[in-house]
Image 1 (cartoon, rainbow, N blue to C red):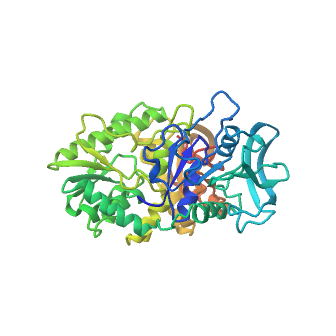
Image 2: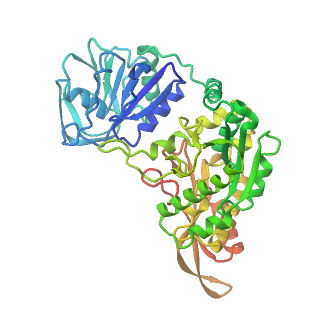
Length: 510
């Protein structure tokens, strides 16, 4: 990961992560950094991309990066806000558009140039801006236009500096990946050599150097991330890896025993710790989502601290943190991606815990974690498991947590998930689960009035969890599942299905 790197400076666009993913799909390593906190060694990067932003270059709160070590010295691509920034501060003119330019558009003019190689006039692109570039910056040449946006793309002569007012990273820009390939491969000359195998080889090498003969404690959850992290660490340090699987009382039905069984034969040293009572006692009476997350994070660390003390000379705590966890947890003043919610495995450890943190997957998106797992020969069934939130059912029970509520939701969840598997739908869904809502509704069972709980079922399709669409499950399946839940789970008399996409909703309800 030391060579052929792309730096993406984030100005706060909610789709900046997609730029990183599209670059990775080209087998080129990319990193996203806030525009006002760039990496120190700019020389390590072969090309730079400026993201979009909700801000305006004409406003008071301008995101103003230092491009002195970048522009004119490295291949540079400005996207949307990035393009307007290059125009506005390069001698051009950016003004408010007469109409908000949002949605699909088609390229009506393309000049002969490297950036638009193998892209034809009429190609669909996605616009999302309220400002527009009225006059090109000094020494700029027009590269492309749409019917409504004359200056849709330009190049600064004498530099490898390019700018586009549309978003090539989103699905709706049909030739967006081709454009990024043109910029990174044909213009910047970056080799497409970042593969799962190369990641495993370099990560294992780095882990050996980082950890030496130290002992590492890892929390296994049964999920893809912690499992892949465990196998990577096992390759690097072998018996010095001590895996612990904690039952926080908020797992799926029978998951504690089934997960422990699942790891048998994988060559991992795993210990099961049942701390369910400890977690549920700590959560009693807490209904705030962030409060629940913080309690679970605190108790999780306390349990690990207790267990780590039983492992002589343990020096490190390994975590399955992945890139979306890191990105969603970053909040930068005047810039990128305001914090949406905290993540239980991001943010370091309290001072009393004497373990250092190692996160072998923290630069990978979820789909990349699975590809790395496949390259190491991990069971496809395990790699195909749906993501499950670290706080478990605590954030799927809206309101306070009680053992009764956990039991109800475990039963509902089991019916839903097993139904997806039995009907061949599980692998067509990226993540699914049930939510226990803090409402009760009137119903009729056996000619008697009931006043019981409502549950919401959720199933989404996604690649990495940064964006997601609800899955159009068959009506017959939903009908059968609803009937089974109401008939078999005491305390539930109503089932609804969530048809919200992310954004604007999140995948989890809390």
